[in-house]
Image 1 (cartoon, one colour):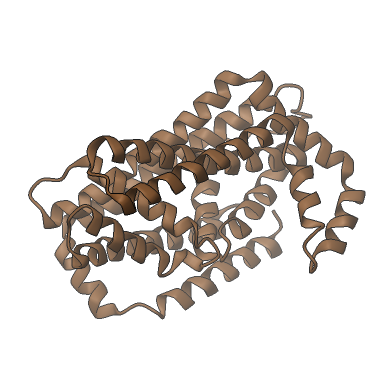
Image 2: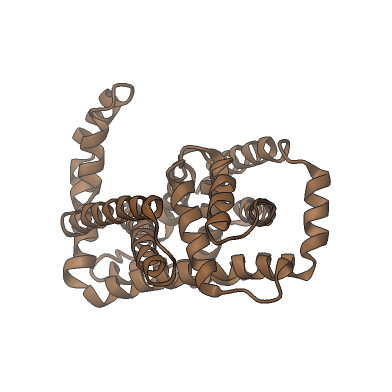
Length: 331
């Protein structure tokens, strides 16, 4: 990646981060960190491990698309991909619309190593698998709620809506895996008034590249089933393990914590927050999700606010780390 684009991503990310930092109540932040104690550092370090799962998913996807596509390129190391993973998520956290920041950065940073088409297909596949695992996580969590919690009329309506939403999402992604997604996404963009002309010109100019990307996307599902299932299971495992973050925080408030409750809190909160994907760091949506989910688990509103605060601070710390890694990356 050229120095110009590297600096552009860095400045853009830090500008958004500075805007979000200006909205914090620092007295509340200091009080929250003091109250969390060493568990706050456990939460921050946990994500250093969780990003290994994400990196592994992306790594095996790239390996699966390497046959016949090397073209003399130097394959990226796991450490290089780990840095791009952390930086990509940092940009996604800070960027309204989520995938508007991290995915273009990953493609540009990886293109010099494995070529633009392979970089694009691997990043699209990773993003698809990451989101696909969320739908499975929400679907399984809905079943877990039915099996372990009392279901009333309101929760039954929410669960039915969640199940329908997840099944629809899983179906859409399976179709995308089987037939590719690049051409479909660009054709969809042709119907958006502001960018329709640009999308039409892009399709006409890059039709062959888009077809190649779609073939590489479809090949993972159709020809590399073992890799496909391993990638999905890696991301799903990461979702389940990330509930440990909720457990660490709740251990500050309670002498013992039910991990199933932590999974349900995470599932409910992440679903609610992702419905508000257009907001930077899902400001407001994530906090509201935590408050509603802990109340469902018979906890207090102050518990939800405390959990949301610690998670928000963890996200900002890893956003800073990810943005600094952009500057440390060699051009």
